[in-house]
Image (cartoon, rainbow, N blue to C red; front, side, top):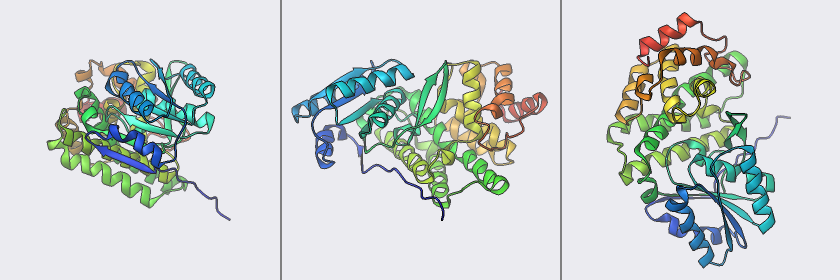
Length: 349
């Protein structure tokens, strides 16, 4: 008998201008009552956290508010303890990746649902059942749970720094090489492969590439396009039961780079650069990828981020050491000469 696979998908997804004002109604529709904990950041508190607190308090849901400044194990434990002490029935993650990931992990440990309220369209973690956690100075992807609901207010998201929107586009476009790696692992290692998840992931990436000339920061319509694409990417991962549809060799490069030089670039920016190089290694159309990234304002060379060529080459050479159990085009690693050639040919250095 084959193994069964559970899919975690949001029950409610609200995307549009002003939808944050519907959060109490959404909670009621999901039969979420009693106390709740809102996890937010110092800046995103002003953008959404305080507003959510007021809305839930007005509806009698007795919210608590926790402001976090990092996404480490200590912050997860702090959120878990705060929610447990107040008897919270659900957790709201209001902010960027940090707040949402902490809410995911704390609610998972408590076995209660969480609601995702993104304030920026910067990565697909707003919907996925994976979370990024800082451990010993390194960012690690860990299993979590998908949100019960997503409330993505495009009026809020469109006011986020422009760099975050372009990083979100980079994260989505990276699906192209993630899928090529997944197909490679399926053919060479007989790894499980979901045609449905792959189709959804690929469609999402193609949409961003096709609409790249029209995506502009500050425009609500652009925010709506990107946030819907990020949600679709997260759903693809939930269908697959892993991050495979949206994370491959390009993500290994991003994590490898962060080991060497943490905090220099955003996750989506590094994934975008990685996608250009990995598409070249796969023998694909890396020029189209590079042009789409340029059009959405995402960096297409390391120099745009103030990164020296040697750091890029070192990250490429060591990328295969990240999650070695995940087979990709980088499986045996790149020599220094091969890494330099790939980076120079594609123009990322």
